[in-house]
Length: 474
Image 1 (tube, one colour):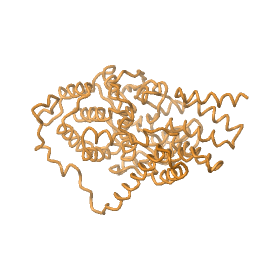
Image 2 (spheres, one colour):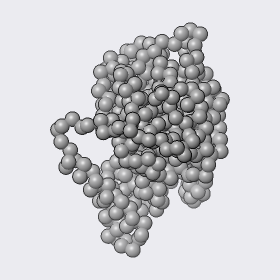
Image 3 (cartoon, helix red, strand yellow):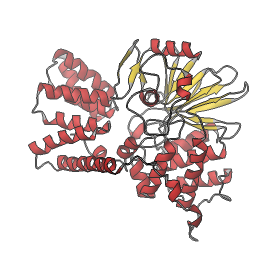
Image 4 (cartoon, helix red, strand yellow):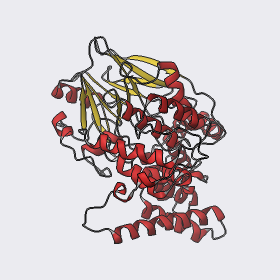
């Protein structure tokens, strides 16, 4: 009776976006009734909402194993595969839904959109050649781009980013105005040159009297980024920052976020650091909004240049040879060394496995050992894995991001694995705090600073996302 009541209450929990408790109650129900396809399918939806795409895919598949005619299972499995970039597998399930429900407009639209992506991918493979792909930079003539007389926004000074330009640009963006395309291209070309000269593992020494601020995911939440700078001060040579990936996607001001971060990288190249996240990749950008946003505000060519720049973002940073920072986490196998990270050829889209994939995608777990990733990519690693890695590489602890945390941060693995997330009220619905970390050279003891979301213009998250991710999940 108690379990049945819990399952009933789960629908209300989902309504109020309490997906973690929804998962808990569906799991309890499945312990009592493990042959209920509806419970698996509904838990799959809750996993989708919490970005546990691997678990969502497994639950949808289980629902269909129990009842091959349960149509929602096909919807959920297709959505899971889409989120993982497995477009062919998703198309097969959408075909099933359309065949069973030919008058379902939503299903038909999803099928058509997915089919378009599959055909596009096939075309891209067909025209690919062994020749070295030319950079967008080679086809740009920035000098001949004219800034119209009626443009009143910020301009680079003699082609260079200055502090005055940065302040003017941030205010310009705050008013929802668009930077001139010439200025955007100038920033991108210059930051690509700066990033391409960096190693895959950046190593810095923080002097005893200095501190650095580490921020986690910002996900296109521009007004919360401005709030970080208001609370913690603008970046400068005496106020260095490290932003730990996932600058774009989901939030609908991703262009404003990334151009601001790239501008500060140009202004303070040795005191402002950026690491790549799993969302600085083509597949994620195609699904979760950044590609659509760049095309809506500028051009497809500019998105191609962003893609090139993202591939040069470093993958990890080591502070004082004691603290390692990466977006995702540790590795699917033991024995990975800092030297292995230095040798990674990062100028590419991430592979499906290996150290580069793990740095961008893996997550910690409370139990020892490793397990299959809840995301469907990389792995989950336990405290013993963390301990062995730190000991082998003579490190004190790791800092990573990649996961929403209610308090904006979380300390796990006996203090050896710290998560920081800097997008408060993520996607306007999670209700979480944001946080950033101060590390001081004197002791490298993390100091956590929390903050809450600030108001932003009435533009919803995912406004530019692929229509498959915007529509309901049935």
